[in-house]
Image (cartoon, rainbow, N blue to C red; front, side):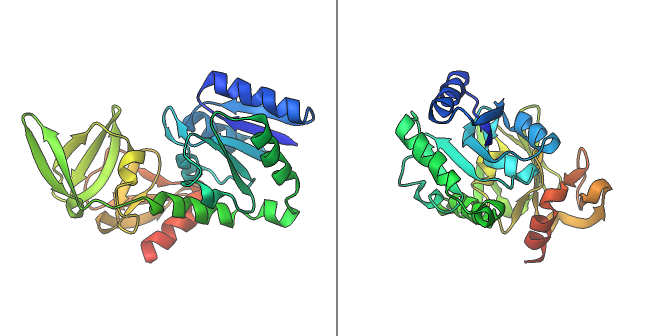
Length: 253
């Protein structure tokens, strides 16, 4: 069995590595990845492992963002500090979770669960896609308005006025339909969790775009798409090949 660990805490990654080897010395750890960026690069360049041990919260954001960039087709065992109630939905088919601090008994249970999966279940990641969407939406109450700090005031901003959100020097830049600009000290992951996914789409790691702001869409290299907005943008908005079906489904719903 070949495995990958996605964990930003070095000691936690080393501890997990050691426990895996204690349980089954034949499991080969191909890589220990510490960030979204590093994970996206690794999964883009390497063959798919048999299983991934993945922490949900990484230093540069939610590990759910990895799925926005690459298509991971193997089973995922999540390692997380979330409580059991919040993550009970992950205990189906090819999905399992381990609560931190991870103990050997729970890890062994998860590994044995993987070993007992049928080949058809391992190949089918539809359950993962659906459950990730359910999990991200289950605790969401979507915002219709934000208060944006500006000098000594809080400026009201309706989500209906937003054209896109963009990472700019580690700050989120919000641009409206009228091309007014606002800045928020936040992350795109945090804001996407507060925005209605029927109205907004996480195009890539740099952009969240509003449905109504789309002017047209160009076919790009490597079966990617370039989304053109009705307002000026600082760089091309590219949707990866892996996310093209999801984008099309979102846009045409």
